[in-house]
Image (cartoon, rainbow, N blue to C red; front, side, top):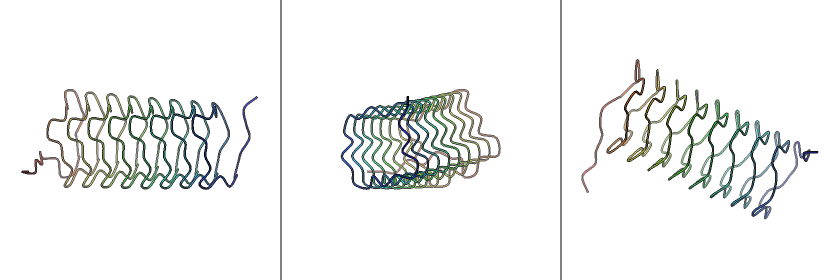
Length: 178
């Protein structure tokens, strides 16, 4: 049986390497929690507060994160393949090297997020806000970016083969000089 932690206050909790596969964490307070290398496959995290949480290397494949607050979260090298992040807030989140293949990021707020080298193949980013996001070296092959806001996004070295950019805003290559 999966853990039922709906609405639990786990703020700043040490959950390093925890097995929370399939857990119900709907609306849980996980702000600042250490979830490095945690197994959250198929977990239900709708509306969860994960601000500033450390999810580095965590497995969130098939997790339901609709409307979750992940502002400033560390998701470097995390596995989010086929995760549902519809309407999630990922402002200033660090997603360097994260695997978001096939993830649902429709309407997600990714302003100023660091997606350097992230795998976003086949991801659904329709209507996502990617203003100021760092997408350098990201793989966006076959991603759906219709209606996404890419104003000020850094796309140098991003792979866009087969990506749908119809009606995307601010879609131009922005490469800062160093």
